[in-house]
Image 1 (cartoon, one colour):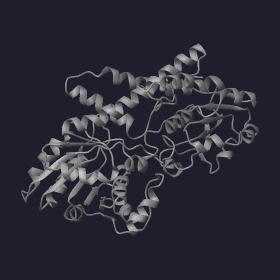
Image 2 (cartoon, rainbow, N blue to C red):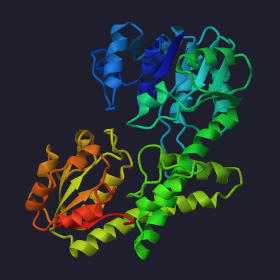
Image 3 (cartoon, rainbow, N blue to C red):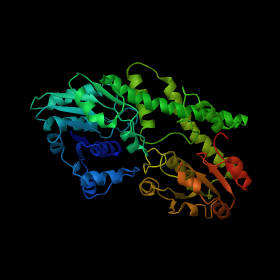
Image 4 (cartoon, rainbow, N blue to C red):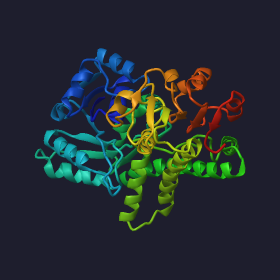
Length: 429
């Protein structure tokens, strides 16, 4: 099939590349001419495991191309995906200006029947607004269908998630686009849920908010574990063996971050308020998440007493492993809190340091994780990169003025760390 993806961020670029990988012909559109030129030249603007190789492979095969022209993309396609940003506004609602602008651009370019697919995470009833906008501004007065097809990609595992999805959700207003959408996703061999557009839009926000709830739940349990001497990892393992609960998203930590969970949670709360529902449970999820960072900063202060003029090494800047994304990163927030207390920082991340430099000035960026601890008063783990588990602990212990580690991701075993002479503090253990 001939597809166009408007927007080449994490969702758009991964979606377009994976569709090309299974044989579709894909045109990716972006209004950032510099990004388009980078992609046309074989570069890639984000780090996502396996993505760069797939982009180059499918560009070479002629199945994947890039342009800055929405008109060109729409003319070449049977199905047009909208995958542009939906950033949060100060009150928690979603900025829909990018979606509205793209809908108007599509309306001005469409000259024959098209399926318009909303891939961005949007509030319920957005599909109706997109359809209304296209109808209003389409001078050609051609037929079209609007479909909701929410993404469920995890940064760091996005290629895997798209190539092997656990489900595909298709929300429609009429039966007409269903066959084409099923044909589009047939190569992925995944269960397909066909529903109305409003249900499809709610599925995305409901899913992410539930996962955020699950993380906050185990973080709340971690506080109880510390108060009673229990081990939150053992509690999580015991809970996770119940197949009704499952082990995923039960890792106590600094709290959730990134470009999805905080934004989608706030948006879902706002959506609920606008419909007259007070979703207080989700407000509590937000509160627990914020307090988790407060507790960890307090733990650092209690350990080091005064942070002013202390030098602290920080491992991790990305909001999670396997990505260079620092948007709403707990690690970045932690660094900012430590700087505000007067500490100086030496920091390292395997992939996110270049992007972090734009939002976190005034720190020393270190290329080698084994050199972060040099001359520091403590070492802090802020992101759960697997590489950090291979840290040269003997070298780090000798490089520190005191063998202190505060592990915000529970990467190391407390008993073993104490046996090696560390003052080691983690979360919920």
